Image 1 (cartoon, rainbow, N blue to C red):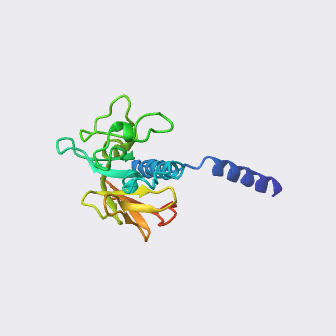
Image 2 (cartoon, rainbow, N blue to C red):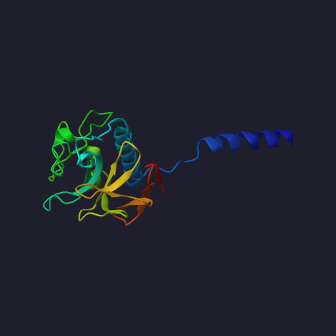
Image 3 (tube, rainbow, N blue to C red):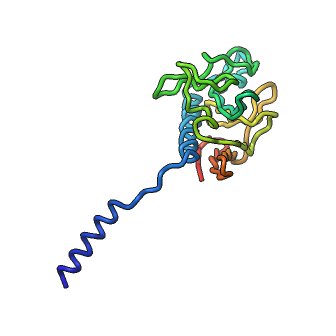
Length: 196
């Protein structure tokens, strides 16, 4: 009887070690990458204080993660991470974008959604992960949406002449081709990020 119990215990241990773990789907990978870049944007905003008593439009220069559509001929979605230091025109240049800390490539793409040697491919949501739709619950712009972070932890959904600070949790919901979705939630005041 003891030998039988011993064998059952050994088989249980072996079985627990070789159980098949579910593979990450492209949707899961997209959520992980997006969370990474949102956290990175928030971190850079904390250490790169854009506040200036001499510049009444300093909030236009806050670090922002913005979702965009590729050109109609290419189709798809992507995002960029930038600080509009050229005067708040919303026409930022590649050099105003953050670089991926691992690859040292810009988190930037043009509307053609083609990757050049110095641009990260991980921002191309449709091309890399099959993401078909992005919804931002706190969006106050005519575009898909953006999230901007201040050095003090405040979170904004719109910059410009009348910045809009978010006061409720902001949900970024992304959908794949099968209409499966995942949500990343950003807390107001702190920018703390959750996913579900």
